Length: 294
Ligand code: OGA
Ligand code: MN
Image 1 (cartoon, rainbow, N blue to C red):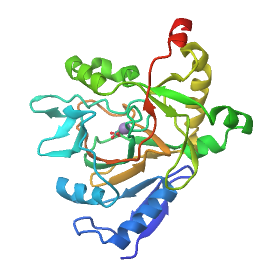
Image 2: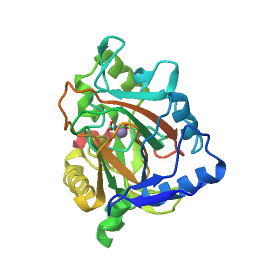
Image 3: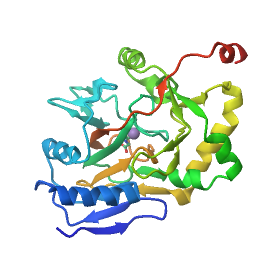
């Protein structure tokens, strides 16, 4: 099958045409998709009519799927591989995932096995908005000065789910359990992509708390600069969803966020699959000297 590719922005993103995911993918086509995805970091396949099982089959071509044990409360019944992101009621109650991804982040960077890829399939979208933004973290790194690159290259930063502000309004019993499952993790500030070998910046406003070996006050200015720098408009792509879009991004070299850019009463429903990555980072033990200084 001949695939078409059309870039969607200067920063990142490409649309792939010529696919109907109701049909099984052959290995050669899956390899071609992977190549396009590695080159563009975000791929969009539009106009799909797929079931949860077909979405899961698609994901399995790219790796092992997460069953979302680190965030266990938001899974689709009978399909633990499908994570439900919606503002609709779930099981008769308001959804806990209606504010998913409001801050820039890379999925599961607060674990020692962060997600390689996430793929969202759009089932319902408001009449206006409900967009998702992406940014290219290779570009964010490449455009830093050589001096700052040398400072950042050996650093680690702490990614801590307890710093994720939107969780404060969710079900506190579930949140306490997720905090227990996910202790703080030290991640490299500059991550070498295991497939492309390229360096990408790996800090996010949602989850990065401070640099290892530095106090929060010392870290703040530089972290804020890096957050601001990494979302310069020329590094980004803003996806305006249509029902039937399947979009897959690379969490190792892209960040994303979902603004609250729609009327709350209008339904938005996404099915996400999450593809496991290689280990990155380490469980972090508190540094007594830093605690005393902070
Ligand atoms: C996610 C996420 C954003 C969105 O699925 O990881 O952050 O647009 N979603 O729903
Ligand atoms: Mn996310």
